[in-house]
Length: 248
Image (cartoon, rainbow, N blue to C red; front, side):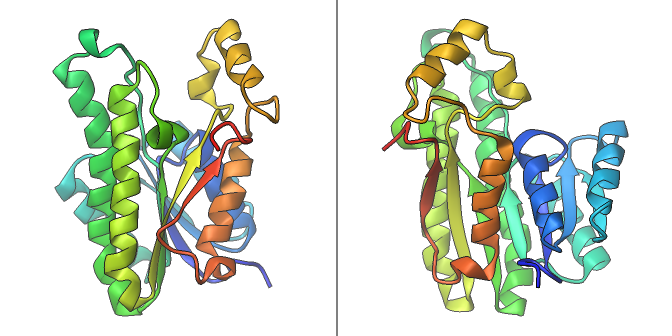
């Protein structure tokens, strides 16, 4: 039997990178997939088709994860379409890097809203569903820079550190209803986002990683698969670094 057979997952920001890898890995293990992105476009349709090849139910939804009312509406639609929500993966995120002395208020607000407020929005919308079911797994995408900080990423690091505090608090608050909440903290993962970095910057990152390479999105997805499945039935309130020992 597949690890997520018959389960339904909501995955935010799942048309590319880590989010898409999670959606594909979950679908491969029998999970029905509701995923969100900012726009309903050809990329969303292509992602739907790719996931559907695994024979699961799948639907993409246009949603701004940073907006509370938008999130309430999209989760209500997902619950109506799929009947239940077993797993929530809060993956939506952006970067607007820069030194604090040059960072604008808009750069700060945008990153906090998309990265951190979205976790509040989706978790709050999903909680009543999981509460009624008496079971659920929430997986929040943090980062190693949320654990240890990083120069020129004060807004991003703050948002990802906030996710860790949210995760640990939610795990304590929801545990009595058998709802688990964990965070994943990826290190240097090879995605479109990191692909925009200059070659010398990428090499500098990789040279500081004990495994001497960047991670693949599917390597993060496999950790999320563990957290979403019953293999992790007694794991809650934890932060799992996926970083090749970069942050130990």
